[in-house]
Amino acid sequence: MTGVTVSAGRRARLWDVDLTLRSGEIVALIGENGAGKSTVIEVASGRLPRTAGELRVDGEPVDPGDESEALAAGISTVAQRPRIPAVLLTAEALYRLVPEGRAPQDKRAAAREAFAAHGIGLTGEERVGDLSDVELALMEMVRVAGEDSRAVLLDEVSSSFSGYDMLLFLDLLESIAAQGRAVLFVTHRLDEVQGICERAVVLKNGEVRAEVSGRDLNRDSMVWLMYDQRFPHRSRPQAARTGRPLLSVSGLSTPEGVREVSLSVKSGEVLGLAGLRGSGVESFVRAITGRGPVSAGQVLLDGTPLGHETVDGVSFFSTREGLGELTEDDQVVDVMLRRAPAAAGESFADERDRLREAIQDIRRYAIGVYSLRQPVSTLSEGTRRKVELSRANSEQHQVYVYDDPTRGIDEAGRAAFHDYVQEAAASGSAVVLASSDLTELIGCCHRIAVFRDGRSCGVFDNSVLNEDRLVELSSGRMPTPDSGTRAPAHAAPPPPPPAAAPSASAAPAVPPASAGAVPDAGEAEPAVVAPRRHAAPERPAAVEDEHPRSPAPGRDPADPTAGHLDWSHSRVVPFWHPADEAEEGPSEGVGHREQIRRLFGEP
Image (tube, rainbow, N blue to C red; front, side, top):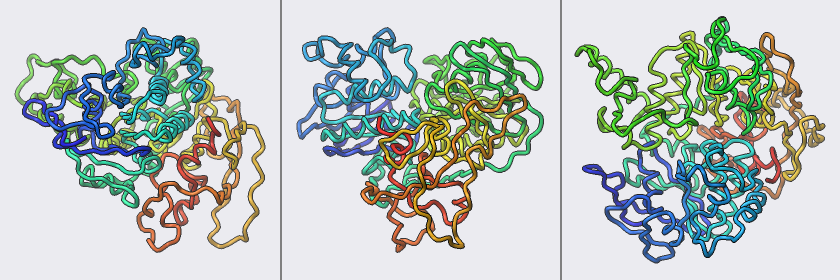
């Protein structure tokens, strides 16, 4: 891509962008919401015409007019929101861009084999409209993995992945790169950039601002290049001053698989919901907010039963349900202030105060708009989500429920949201936060309820959790030194490595997994007792960090361990207990990919 410019009226969405991808390389494309990342993907896939510049694949100029022509030219893409007819079967969607003469005769059999080869739990018989966001993204990854292309462009594919889904994604990504194909990976999760990519290209206001690799590929450097400021990493929330229970759930069951869940959220606290895909978290959230069916149980708001159709007093925001009922004419200010385009009878003073409120939110969430009257339809996907998030937080409520709220939102928007959640709790509200981002749960929540197989297997105090512990509890598997071995939750842990001589700086003893579990009033004991933690396995001599990074802030560059991965901001971390961090920070850990494989085994 050389000198690519895309104009939109008097504004340029991209300006003189140069971008080169090399064979077998995984490159991150990062930037704040509205920086132009998705525009780059749309231009390369033929969905958006360019004003100037050229595209070349293997040195040959190409000019695709749509995704099919892009694939014929050697470019595969996965859009942030794939536009696939809902009535198609997954087998049909898998080969929808392949010319009829080159597609397999029996698409269903071919799709079933392709899904099974990558460990994806699809058969080819499902309707696209019935897939979850994660299933749709994995289906699209299988599609591009099987296409005959030279470059693969991925736009926010992993934004809703966690745990085993992330392992499946990594496996597909590595298989694509191993074929000698170039990969461009758009993401807002900077730990993924550090753990997966060889280098990163930073976009700002439609222009390439910098390209970073090696020691410069760290969170602080990338954040500074994107925003010209730094956002402090929120390790854990301050202790909550809780009051009476504001939201109480008793014996809740749903036709979608949630079984007899009981928990409560008190005023002043943030309760997190963690679980892998299919664990029941999504169905539970839909049920307590009146958006899903309930077959048994009761939901109380400050002691008053709530109906299952309308839930007054509870604010709800979810990126899974799209951006609400928006039209082409909706303007930013109208969406943010929850009003019709023309507010009848509004005085000048009221109008002034409402506009001031909107401007404050635009600054708070770093919403990239050029006018309050800008149509929402012209905003990028992530910027539109910021507008909707600020709208959801524009009024005071007793209870706030969020379902993956920061998916596709940049670092600035995440920081603003995390601050708002803590302010809402401090003001006496109760907050329920379901998220696929485990770092977000650890950084925001005072307690975390872990779901597995439709049940809550315990409510744990934040102080005894970290990301890898959440994955262990959510999956029911123990991490094992042999990456090819999966151990059930009840299996005895492997023997620890030979003990070293004790020292004064030795880390404190690790509490058992059940420590910190806080059963709510009326809640039965967890059906499955979480396994005890075991000692961290020794780093195998043959395993080396594939992408060394800069040392953690404050570390001596001359230190022999300074070249190892900086896990201080990572969503998937090595095996240590939070108490260890109080000493000298995280110890040396295995690579990002190896860490996930130790938890889940090979896909």
